[in-house]
Amino acid sequence: GLVSEVNRLEDQVDRFQIEIDDSAVRLMAMFDPVATDLRFILMAARINTELERIGDQAVNMCDNVELLLSEPELKKLVDLPRMADIAANMVRASLRAFREGSTEKANAVIKADEEVDGLNDQIFRELLTYMLADAQTIRRSVALILIARAVERIADHATNIAEEVIYMVKGEDVRHPEITHSGENSGS
Image (tube, rainbow, N blue to C red):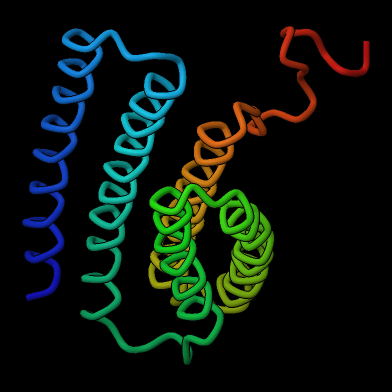
């Protein structure tokens, strides 16, 4: 079924990660790239890691999906599928931003992460209410919370890719805005 397909694809993603990392090292060793090319190679390697971690999150979801499929439906899912759609679109958009070198598209991905975080919080609060009202819902609620958390992490990885795109294009590190490029806190 779909769970075995996810596991098979994740194994493939792991192999791709190793191949891409090896290629990046070879390119740096063989061609002594100039600063912009070096930045591109480093960003591609970092993005490669983010994609591998997205695969890991997909695998993490599968155990909880199997549990949910084996039990009666807890509730009609509305926010979780919406959250998953946004996160999947963020991944696609972050990779499009990378291909096109678009900081505008990268910034849109970063902004979308706020909506995913809000939905994750909302899902958690709603499922907590279910668990407090009826202990019989705890297993299914926890499974849904863990799935939502994995989706939220996928959105975070898409955001990380978008931040790498901005660094690649502008040379500007936007990952920790509270820290200046000299390494000191901007509030100092």
